[in-house]
Amino acid sequence: MSWLNDTLSWLSNGANWAGPDGAAHLLGEHLRLSAVSLLVAAVLVVPLGLWLGHVGRGGAVALNIGNVGRAVPTFAVLVLLALAPEPFGLGDLSIVTALVLFAIPPVLTNTYVGVREVDRAAVDAARGMGMSGWQVLRGVELPLAAPLIVQGLRLAGVQVIATATIAALAGGGGLGRLITEGFNRQDQAQLVSGAVLVAALALLVEGLFELLQRSVRPPSAR
Amino acid sequence: MVGYTLLVGSHGVSGHAVTLADGCLVRNEWICGEYLSSRRTEIWDALVQHTLITVVSVLLGLALAVPLALVARRWRWLEQLVLGASTVVYTIPSLALFSLLLPFTGLSATTVVVGLVLYSLTILVRAIVAGLAGVPAAVIEAARGMGYGERRLLWQVRVPLALPTVMAGIRVAAVSTVALTTVGAVVGYGGLGDLIYDGLRTLFKPQVLIASVLCVALALVVDLLLLAAQRAATPWRQGRPA
Image (cartoon, rainbow over all chains, first blue to last red; front, side):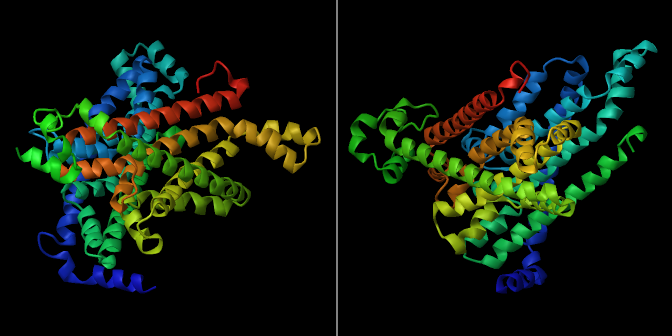
């Protein structure tokens, strides 16, 4: 188990955390890239999913985007964007764009399914009480779909954090740098430390979303 | 002429320097038929490697997932353990996993396959557990009442009824595996991913585009084949959405 000791001593060595190439800076960069990507994906497709679910159309589109999205390798998208002309090329914009495209399918699919699976009786009752389409969406469908929407964000968030490491292959920042550098320099302790930090970050985010998912659960489902 | 020297140096096409002088290869254009015709074997080999790695990984993943899921269904605490472990596996970056396996399996296709088996395994175990859990209790009771033993119950009732969910899981696992195989390029066995990675280092645009397009096409073909298999295996669901 010498690699375990090596990894622990790498992680506990303050020198490895300091500086512009240090783990602390890379961790912050990783978190920033992931958070921005997830946020942009959510802003772009949660409203779309809500609307598609509300009008009950375009379901096949929402689900197919989910399937096709899985088929597109993030690594390929990243490299295509890295070779693309300005404003793309090697840089944060290409990385965030690739991660946004990666995060969209689970968020869109879950939002759409969440709204569609709201009890039709509740929607009919709301309409019968004279609620407008907007009021039904805001007052009935959104709260009841919230747990599934958050689950989609959770799925996307965890996968974005794990996948953001690929940015390092295209000269980007984040914790992937520890992994590729460790790989290139045959420094296994650094490589494992990078992987451990990414996994820990992902599990932390998973836990936070789990709490959020519980807090948005409607009283009837508790 | 920077692009020209780059191409000659890294792709060994110097023999055609005269014809290439004003071709799309030299201008390094995204869409280039000349690339397709001159690198046919290289592209084909990458596609074959990509397909083999994917198929072997998903089949091995399935072979391991079935017994794991059956065991997990029998003991509840194991189910929690297996599902928890699969969440953890999914947080390990593929880039790191392939690199970590390197000391054990070396620069070989095995490294990539072992990593991909682990990822597909986690998707498949979840799907099989969910599929078996979704079989209505009333159906099980009815079969028991008709004198079905445990073995017959499993193969003639539980498995067929779980099949749609399991097939959906296999499709997700297969399509994800096709995409993830590209990352195997870090150890030199990424199929089409090798062409993409190489294209990034040499800034070779047509190679990156063709390899990416083929990768998505392969995933979609695999998905359609599995969808057809799913329809054939569950004829009683004809006309219902997949």
